[in-house]
View (cartoon, rainbow, N blue to C red):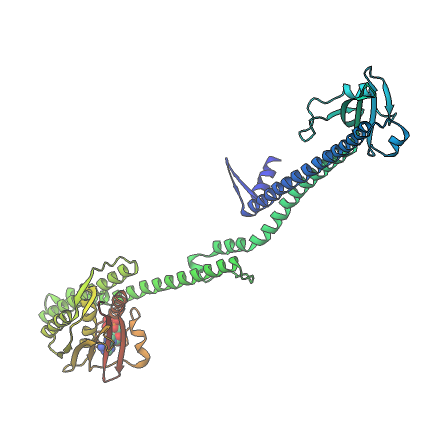
Length: 483
Ligand code: ADP
């Protein structure tokens, strides 16, 4: 039996794991609903009951007071208990008057069926209700509740006692019944509120359960699953929408990561294959043939250098993705940086004419190391993709609004077709990826411009490209000036 209750509790509302009990939101809402309603009903019943109770006693008191006042006025006016006295109706309906002499003998009695004076006096309650007036007494006898007051007066030189009574049994019974109904109503409403609250909150929270179930089914291998968005346009549909967008982003990131890993391994496979090929060649002919030995060593060295460059770039991008790439930004004189990079380029460049055309001064804020690296990426590309004898130049000047430096890095090389210009910043994208270095192609990884773009983004630099196939390429960097 207990195990059945336990499993029901687990299914419906409470998880019973040892001592801890966790309530579901729907159960919590239902309990809260019920509790709030219960407290409110109790408060309302209490206030209403108190008002009615007080009202009843007050009414009885007023009727007694009025009757007492009427009788005393008549007596003061010297009117005895004559016919005329009763014709004035001094006693209100429901109020009973008894007149006794000092010996206790009843002289006048308006209701013979009423309990005797002694009987009533013998059953006075010790603790009368708080709201009962001080002069009045309350007696309980023969299932009756009587409100009464005793007044001593002198009538024609004789001491008399006036006893006024009013029965409040019906009022008391009404109040008791009212109490019972109000209490039962409150308990019933509480139970109903619990069920209604549980039912309503269960219905409202159903989409959350669907959301949880779908979320549970989503795995790395099945990231294309999405949560059905409720049409209600409320917080839940917003939550489902946000969750789906988060999954979109995660999936895109995950796919990018997968592509990155497969592209990187693909790029590394080629030089490793070449190195293995040459080492085979060397082991067979290298010992005897000096030309084979020289070619083998050169090629292995060149491939190893390419691999090293690729690994460096991969590491850079990995650090950038993980936001671990540290930048030390400071105010820099751009013209000095451009002049220095171009001078070094001129020193190593033998096959092209390298020129610094214009180099206006301008202070920028950035990380010197990565800004140099970015410039070198564009210039080295110009060198790679410009036939021997071609021109490579740089030019730097202020924009017309004076807010930016416009640094142009250009060549009159092979150019880039319009349809490829958008893709060149993608990782591992190369316009002519089919031709390897051995086949007369240009060595490259397709990562240089991705790195340049990341560096530009970190410095709020905008890159624009102007290139024509066969005519050349010009990259313009719009660098913000300090202040
Ligand atoms: P890579 O290591 O292949 O040079 P990049 O990311 O630096 O990689 O460049 C991507 C591609 O953009 C290159 O493969 C090349 O096809 C093209 N490209 C970049 N710069 C130039 C340029 N100055 N002239 C012609 N093509 C260029």
